[in-house]
Length: 454
Image 1 (cartoon, rainbow, N blue to C red):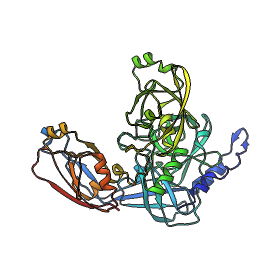
Image 2: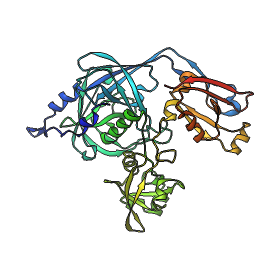
Image 3: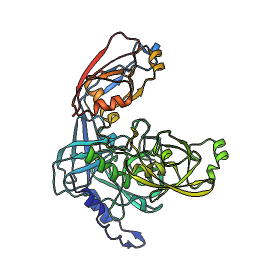
Image 4: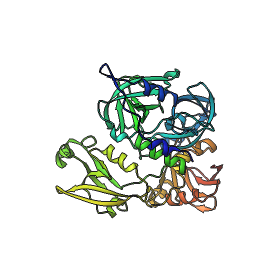
């Protein structure tokens, strides 16, 4: 276990002295550049889509694929402990079979992917190095509009590059994580005008004291290169995800069990009806029947104003605040109901509806989205029931099997699969070797696939 916490909680460096009316960023640049690495990846197989003869009947249900030559990629990463833990973006290492990191002193070593989280686009790597320079985590809640920041990374395959800018917005959601996160994206970016280009992904956003306040993740650009705005994942969220990935191998994310509506995602009619442009909080548009919020007494129409110590006034800020807690955490929620200030304590649940530790994140490990088939859907598709693979990404199914989109899983090892709970129980049985049995709608017979999950 790394000494990550010590690195996070140590006192911040002294505030840099203004030089002729300007903030001196030299120390911050020197310290951070030593702790940012160049990441290179290789993938032995990369699948490309081709059309199936079944497409005319089943649409894009089937996704037959062919294999190409090995692919390579690159990005940046940030050393967060002296014993070799590194944080980067998930999209930098997603699908990689081999990962190497090059330190600021030009030394290159192999790295292992400890865990990934598509929801936040974060991943943790581990090298067998020691006594490494590392960045300490700052408090991203303290980030202010207009403050100076540095973006550090390896853009365009250049050597270590440092750019400066200011924070131009907070709690931005740009929709970039939605597809890969299976509808559970956490986006509450710090927006800056520091120049960030391809290759900067996974690099550091630091304040003028050299503290890590974000991981650079995306740019807004019509060309694919820097065009004015870049986006970083806030360090408080990074810290929580990193701790979970190191301790558990996947993120222990707590869910409130509500849907929200704000002026950004609502129609003009909804904005007018619910006065969303006048609300200083987040309007609850839906409460899950079996979710944590309903059990705590929250209702549709309530306006959440605070989660724990975090004031919230936008949907992305609400999601970010809840995502910093784990299942089982008891969190104070402050809200308005009919104009009256109220509060309650919510015990957050995991995505399975319990407060237990989730041993494996199946969507990430298997690299797939799943849909539980109702009896009606199964009858319509001509199968006996099960769980359908609705989307394939990088993961075990694509890597080790020839399972295609539309495959209906009916059995894993000796266990029947009819629900998502069955699927989770089968893969969380402690076994490493699995045989999946199932069928394709419109095809005869059962198909069997064998693979290992380490």
